[in-house]
Amino acid sequence: MKTGLFRKFAGAAAIIFCLGAGLGRAQEAAAQASPQPVGDFVAGIYSLVSSAGGKLPDWDKVRACFLKEAVIVLRTSRTTLTAFSLDGFIKDFVDFYEKPFKRGEATVVPKESGFTEKVVRMKAWEYGDMAHVLVLYEAQITGFMAPQQGIDSWILVRRDGRWFIAGATNEIVTPARPVPPELGEKK
Image 1 (cartoon, rainbow, N blue to C red):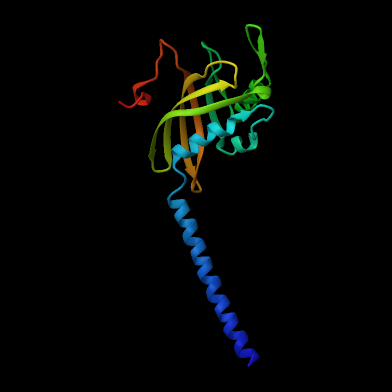
Image 2: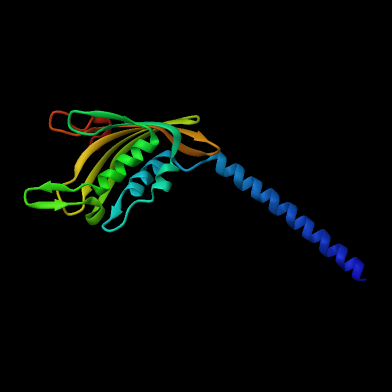
């Protein structure tokens, strides 16, 4: 009798295990078939590089969003564009957080006061395993000055069911270079 009960229990356990394994594979296949929307992924980058005063971003989480071979070309002054490797991009951001900014009598360090980048509007385009996302964003050292608007252009690829940034570039919005129509306010 014990043997018969054991066999029934073992048989039921095997069926449950197989069903569970099949369900797990089905869920995994569904996740690969429909990864996180690329716009949500890119919006998350802005949260990752933002930080409250006294805290710093988790640079390993930021790094994990990029291909290790990614190229990032950023406006580093009003007249200069600089090409960065992924490590150079992270170092430039770390240096930014440490750098004192002076406006009049006030001096502010982003690491101490905080820094925020947020998405105002975006336009995302996906085709197969590639995507392009244009973002109108606002960046601000907390409590220091009005937000500065900029445009980011993100190129992404999908690998193993998730998005990675392959390249990025940006431009500052100015009166002479207003927000492009693709990211303008909806009428």
